[in-house]
Image (cartoon, rainbow, N blue to C red; front, top):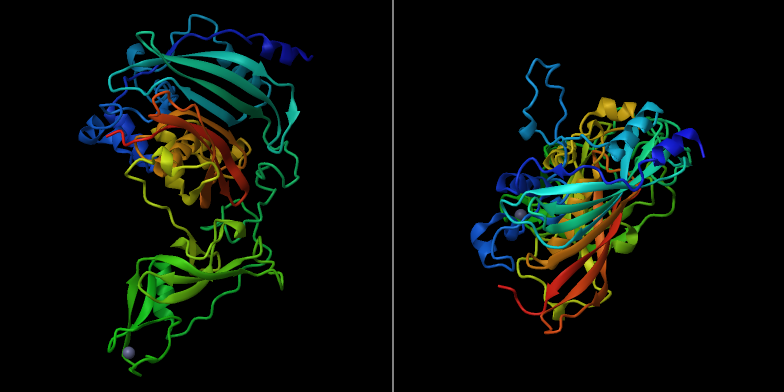
Length: 502
Ligand code: ZN
């Protein structure tokens, strides 16, 4: 074993000092987190509704478990001319004991392993946290791997376990957590795995990725065919550039038609205007174009005939799902692909189904049930806002220059946000009063800006029926796939009631 590995492993088994949350569980942090994640469960936000729920009061989203004790922003206040924060306002632990985990990370940084990504997070929840409770975590270093060659680079996996309890000593949960510390730009260029080996690897951003090309991405070899535009269709393309789906309407008989024409096929009027469609529709018909191969598209494109809720149909591409997930009648939502050639194109992806307001009951769920597809557009704002809402100020999640320096082509989503979004997805499907017992995730390809991650999932087990028949544990397995591949795979166990809990 190398000297470095011996040093790195010297702290294994040592429990660090308690990291106390700087604030007790509070509404502003919960609200900020829910807003960033798009979580709408009233048990987290609405005092009156929560009173009638299974907790009898507002509780914190369980996926926030490790957000409470995150260290927060580490601006060097002295360097900015500010006095240092008083100790009691800082999340820094007292640190009189040797902190094995921090020491391990410092050793790795000093040895050149400055890149960092989290790869696994497994939460176990003993109970939900209530307002006013203050928690602390005790972290134990449990493993440091040998040096490994990964797609991202040469590095070591560092694994910890943290036990959380209230400051009164009441255990509330635990977390198994693994990160990879790696040397930037030492990855294998296989195009496999994370698919994110740095700016030269070229993800071959396909049609499914959406949005503007990242500044460091190589120019695509072949661009998608440019649509033809003329004075009769100008309104449509101007609409797309403004993120409006404009559909031609006859001003005489009000009939809608697409594609735009020069006169109304119903009444013959040449007095034509347009409406702005909602962008919601269903899939009427579809196919996948395998031949001839189209080099501008990463995969054979999916072509769909979309029935708009206003009542007309249009042909477009269906993106952000696999062809196996495409089904006639599925709900679709427009989005606008901003092409580097200077035009915008309305495309369709699966629509997010609204959150279930009445909690799923045991009799309504069976093993094999599929959860609805749910797209999560990854805007820079979403990535930064969720990082900050989880108190994760690691520069790679908000600073593109530093992310690049540390081996990534752009900023990427932090693991606490992936975990939070997965919990939202499961919560939306199960309803507000289903209770999480655990949430286990593993990360693969990074979530970069301008991509979209589509969640899918299914029920894999129903077990541990309560003696009185009031509930059982439902296990769901889920995945979130972006244009690079699977970003997140994982599972959750929920206690699902047999009868309404309110
Ligand atoms: Zn007409």
